[in-house]
Image (tube, rainbow, N blue to C red; front, side):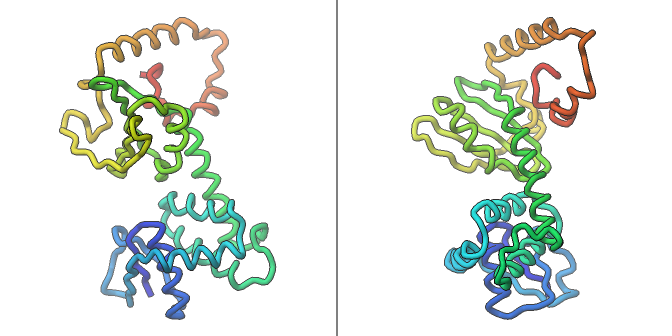
Length: 254
């Protein structure tokens, strides 16, 4: 049976509730926007329900630590194929066991959740380090990202703490949504943008960069070029700390 949910974490928890309540066996969970071959299998479509989701969380909190529940959410944000099935398998294992299961890495789903959460954590850390804002149109700051995993919700607290007095927007060009921070209200909200063709779906903001911003970027490139000592360059070590796929976010690499 295929269990189809709306792609939200609340929807996934609701799906787990329905699986238990209806005693479904032999299931696979799919996001609605990724499902294929609807007519080949029996399907159950989940309607996201906050009460059902909260009941699942309460049950899991009795069996699992806060860090493991956090890993469940991080793994959900990984968007990897089949990750929902590992979350379900882990949840079933924990709920059915009289003993703690979090260190049982002999279980495939326990191991998978731990490994995927580490991957998402590494990407979160790197984007917190490598995101570079550009000032555009009167004291508004913009940054575009293209992460492998949906880490945007995870990095927002870092930038709220770091830039509390600025208005900014971080936009995920792969998933076509952003998070906007309003310094007046100190609130964030999701933003869907309508970019023109010249911006390459939001990846390029050169045409909108403030004049002073362009000047500062030029100064930074000049500074970086002159403090770099070619004789001491260790490219292997440099790539370990700054992988090449992140260079597009760094002004000095342009």
